[in-house]
Amino acid sequence: MARPEFDIVVIGGGAGGLVVAAGGATLGAKVAVVEKHKLGGDCLWYGCVPSKTLIKSAHVAHAMRHADRWAIPPVDPKVDLAAVMERVDGVIRGIEPNDSPERFRGLGVDVIFGAGRFVGPDAFEVNGRRLTAKTFVLSTGSRQAMLPIPGLAEAGALTNESIFHLREDVPHLIVIGGGPIGSEMAQAFRRLGSEVTVVDMAPRILPREDADLAAVVQRSMVDDGVRFHFEASIVKVEGARGALAMTIRAKDGRETRIAGTHVLVAAGRKANIEDLGLEAAGVQVEKNRIVSDAKLRTTNPRVFVVGDVAGGYQFTHVAEHHAGVVLRQAIFKLFWTKPSTVIPWCTYTDPELARVGLSEDEAKAQGGPHKVYRFAFEEIDRARAEGETEGFAKLVADPKGRILGVAIVGPHAGELIAESVLAISKGMKAGDISAAIHTYPTLASINRRVADQKQKEGLTPTSKAWIKRIFGLQGA
Ligand SMILES: Cc1cc2nc3c(=O)[nH]c(=O)nc-3n(C[C@H](O)[C@H](O)[C@H](O)COP(=O)(O)OP(=O)(O)OC[C@H]3O[C@@H](n4cnc5c(N)ncnc54)[C@H](O)[C@@H]3O)c2cc1C
Image (cartoon, rainbow, N blue to C red; front, side, top):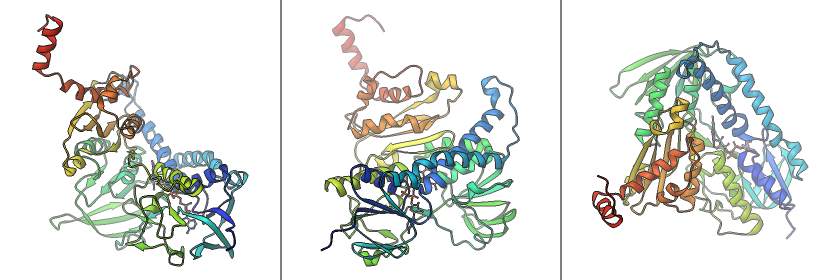
């Protein structure tokens, strides 16, 4: 049998695919990337980078309006959305060279633009060229599904792919979905001056998180002036961008008409699995999901999946982690390598909500013995100095103190969760975090203070009496 032309062919040059390509080429593999649009994927062009850049401008506008919290005269800034979006574009352009075809070609990667398809279990055809490889990596990502709501598409509904291209004013944005993307965008647009209404079928935002944590974010959004319609189904959308109306139906059947100017669809992502010739490759698909094992191998042992298209947690850091797992298997043949199950994430609202490991609800549902500890940012000196005391940390531990999960809702929660990621990955106990010196005054000390709650539990009146007796103490 002829030797395959490539060691690895990557299909989809986004967050996951590019890590496979760069890592593979650096280790000496002959690699090709097939990309149908532009390198960088959702994260760079339509996801993490633009959303977090927009959120920063929203945060500044909000701080200006509420500057009296820091004893500075407040001002109501006149936000020019077009200028903010130009800044978003500038940040993307600044990062783009890291993901550019020139950079990858410089690493020795064959970058091929086009949409191809498998023509057999070991061959992928693009632009009339047949690529053979020892390993194929499917990293085609996901996209916003257009919901089958009458009039939605005709109304020029926005998705994450179009919203950052807006240059016009957005007087009233109606957001479909109160998940992470919907909540981040709703709050950001509100703070940038739009009226914002969120419509969701669920009874609250961020349904994957414990209700007490999500409530802190929801309260903040209500304070900002975001309006919510929960447990609502959407009947229809009428009109077009600029002047439209959405009719929603509440649980009791009552219909309400919401007038707005723009609609953002932020509910329901769909894996990009169409037109790839998966059948020809022997890659099985079930319920619109590529079938893969715990090591990310599809039903064709030559073909792996990484990132959003793998159908699990849809985050850039997960796609990048998958890439490492697949590289270890493809190059070093370490077929026992599996993705980590310790996966953190963060919703970048204000306050942020970050989590790793089990939530309180999940721990309850699993039924194992566990206890929950909380510590409020109000008690953290740095949070007081910053004027950011909303929120708390929650730690779930087993009876021996082994940490099962940590969630933080509060300032910079996305940064603060990193310590717990390491702790849970290494099977640490709350006592390990308690024993570690944390810089004062930092927000990060909330990690120690919440872990201390577990340690303090051991100090019962009986144990205190014994300590006093043994060491001859005289206090109360
Ligand atoms: C608004 C928004 C905000 C987000 N914020 C965050 C965040 O803050 N943090 C976070 O971790 N994650 C965030 N995400 C999720 C993150 O963007 C994705 O999880 C990540 O991009 C997935 O990487 P990937 O490699 O699987 O796919 P992508 O990075 O999307 O790459 C897929 C690539 O495949 C290409 N492609 C598709 N089909 C084909 C085909 N048939 N042939 C060839 N190429 C193809 C695409 O053009 C694309 O370049 C956000 C997503 C959105 C939408």
